[in-house]
Length: 361
Ligand SMILES: NC(=O)c1ccc[n+]([C@@H]2O[C@H](COP(=O)([O-])OP(=O)(O)OC[C@H]3O[C@@H](n4cnc5c(N)ncnc54)[C@H](O)[C@@H]3O)[C@@H](O)[C@H]2O)c1
Ligand SMILES: [Zn+2]
Ligand SMILES: [Zn+2]
Image (cartoon, rainbow, N blue to C red; front, side, top):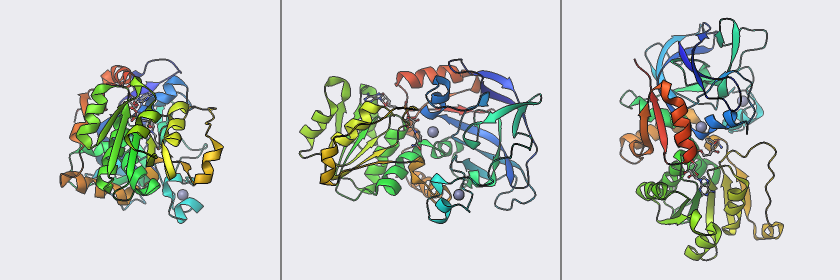
């Protein structure tokens, strides 16, 4: 089968033939129908996050089950599923205390003495985030997927696999935004736009969207942002404080830069909570004004929207099909697997929200 392979930092992806092993007892083979391109796919190529190479990138996908291992009874061939990198073991401290998004992943990966899930003529292809979605098929642990209702279009469903769940979950699960409160979202890419929608659904009173690209701010408005701040037109903290006197109750950072993380903290009012979604490059330290902590301001991270994805994703599909969650508007364009490098360039420039790879069926 064809897959997009990253062989070295700084190199373009290459479309190559790779092979999947047969499913182990608790594994599932999936035919990929659609895969979204998330900024987290770009970090290993830029070397800002370290992953073993060569790897097949991609981690936001939906497809149809083709084959299941002998111990799998949750799904059967023909079922429609969405994958999620928040594979849960069900045994560890985090799973058992209701925080499966930060699971230690006991026994959900193949051991070193077992053959790899993905290979190329005997050479190991490392699996990216336990998924590797930029490929015609996936071989994953059964706890890396959720069944999805049959009337849910799979290209929209793919978006639930990372970006949308991360954005919505950061609002509902990590921050717990209450109705009527004020929210600021820094970065209006696929993840930030989903965060804005989460704030709308949670009933936030004011939602300030911050980006440097006017077309992204327009999209944010279409998602329900009440106020727009162009970060290229002056200090965004000042601009937000001019709009909302005293600062916001909740801020979200969906880019992954030291500067914008610090802005997220600086725009909080007393008792406010800054939730950092963006992935900060290795080794970068973040500075805050320590004196402000006396006002009970909080800075916290969010991993994949603190999801419980087998519960959350079907609910999000229901919201979409009830017209309460905008997913069509998040898709800037559809591409073929062969256009992946072009898609990475477009994402880097910031003009697109989500791009979806459609696999030939
Ligand atoms: N925590 C998690 O579990 C998790 C999950 C998914 C993605 N992420 C991370 O979230 C981040 C966002 O992902 P995405 O796919 O939405 O990315 P994206 O590239 O689609 O969006 C980033 C947006 O930020 C804007 N931007 C860039 N620099 C800016 C600045 N200085 N000020 C204001 N706006 C600026 C860009 O114009 C763009 O609209 C990435 O770091 C990604 O790796 C984290
Ligand atoms: Zn992602
Ligand atoms: Zn666990």
